[in-house]
Length: 343
Ligand SMILES: NC(=O)c1ccc[n+]([C@@H]2O[C@H](COP(=O)([O-])OP(=O)(O)OC[C@H]3O[C@@H](n4cnc5c(N)ncnc54)[C@H](OP(=O)(O)O)[C@@H]3O)[C@@H](O)[C@H]2O)c1
Image (cartoon, rainbow, N blue to C red):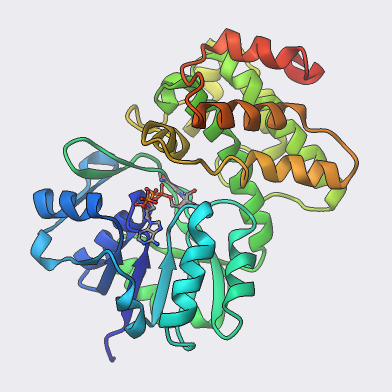
């Protein structure tokens, strides 16, 4: 079979992890990213790690990396892995440089990136992919995968030539005909990104504290109510059905440690990418996540006070405000606006 060219647009945590795993499996991959990632690759190569000591290494000399987007000209598959705020810019470059025959896939969180790419790239097939796992860039240069799960992709015949390529890279793709439900299922879990970013703590430590879980439970409950009105049944992504998440999160700490499953036993080093954004002084994706719930609720003439408040606090943190908010303090701040907090 003729070798197919993969271009990763946005070689950050997810893009470099996915791109690096594909290179390690000898796929033909070009990465588009920033000088900081180029420096990391020159210094350490690409080192991907995961559960149970799994590790894959690619020497820097094997990595095709560019800070410009020219490699798009030869793309058969474009993986879009920039943050949501950069999607419009990425779409413009793909439109100008990539062949119309290239398959374009958004590996991003949020609901609206795929439709934005589709509207800007009317001649390309544009599909969504939901990445269920978390990748964090460790100080020693490693891209560490902290959680498990297969990448779910919007079902389409264009995936056929790529399934084996991703399987060889230990990144099996699972096509789904109900992708909107999958996106919302992921978004429900991503509502914790804001809570995590505001806590300043690793995910496991943050989820061990009930005050944070109460806030998360309230934000998920608001989303579930809005989705029910919209007739959308979010997919179950972990071991807990979405409608049971609020009750699980409200358990006392000991009971949550017993019953919390994957949520309670998350890798001790895992952090949310929203926390990374605040650390790096970047804008976050809070509007694409908690903001999407607020917008959906408002379209139904309802309020979503927990998500609204989380948006406000994260925007304040983006401008230098508090991002080490203790659990009781966050819960108290929300309690006045959100009667369901302790429900
Ligand atoms: N990290 C995770 O664990 C995870 C898990 C699942 C899904 N996701 C989703 O995946 C997407 C990417 O997240 P991420 O955490 O991987 O983000 P990230 O680490 O910020 O990576 C994106 C990279 O793309 C770069 N970039 C943006 N525009 C560019 C351009 N025009 N040319 C070259 N490079 C450009 C960014 O540089 P600058 O920072 O300089 O803009 C950044 O280095 C998000 O939608 C996120 O929600 C992330």
